[in-house]
Image (cartoon, rainbow, N blue to C red):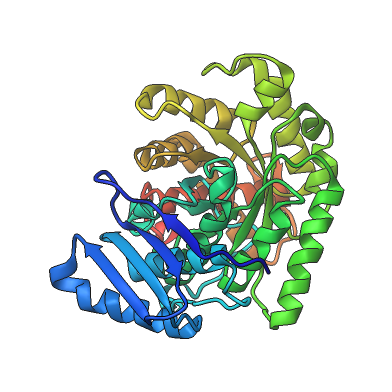
Length: 405
């Protein structure tokens, strides 16, 4: 490992919040000299100093000049930023300074979990993390790919790792979008050991990419004796990806959904992306069909105008009519609109109630055939009705004990 004598990392400046900046210069003698400037020095200055001293001991840093500019960073962020500089100096020796695991995040997920909304958070912006779960998205995506500049990929890995361990997600599915393969395989070392639920694989164009990621995940799980289920969500973002969408969707039984990314797709085919979406209708239809053929969810792209809620609502209505079950969100204010637009209509709810009631009645009488009037109801229709009921309960449109009232 090549070592340097001086390195820095983090963010600084008057507009920075909930983050910090470190400069470390290695010296031959003099011990550790710390210069700490913190906006919360009165309340937390001593605890920050103690944390830095402990990290110096952990990484065997005995002689150095350390400058830290803190703008209210959480301890987990301070840890990530300090470790980043140690790694950039080349003196980490493969060690990781890990925050304690937040017990509130010790939950898993299921393949068919509702994924109406997924909120993207830039991997190198810790200020967005602490309150993201309060907006009640179905999933929170810590992004290591497009939202992170190439020079800060190493910083984002550590921040995402520490956030998976320490930030309260308030029950949201814990997702990470890794970098495009094969670069993204390195991200897995920081993600898999920390109870991630879903790994998003961007710009996916072949089943081989899924198999490669799956093998890498399995290897890490076996080495660490991890038992939690980890699912994949490939993102189709090119013409080739669209053509191979079924091959991708059926590449592993750990794929829970197939998503589409239209910014890259429209660039790939050489057209402008519009709110109306005529230019991507065929591609999205193929992706929905591939997902349904593989028995997984279809998730629509993000809506990039965070100020136009009416256009967002129309976009969700269209996505729902095509068979999509979820939508990407890039701002918390989009979540409520997405959930409302994906909620079942009153007609859908009433129809589902009748189907479920007829099914339960037939089952109680030991009948193998379910019918409403003269129309026979098969298993997929009943399953879809149960899903409508589940959505209606989740959106507080009906009570959980609706069939007892």
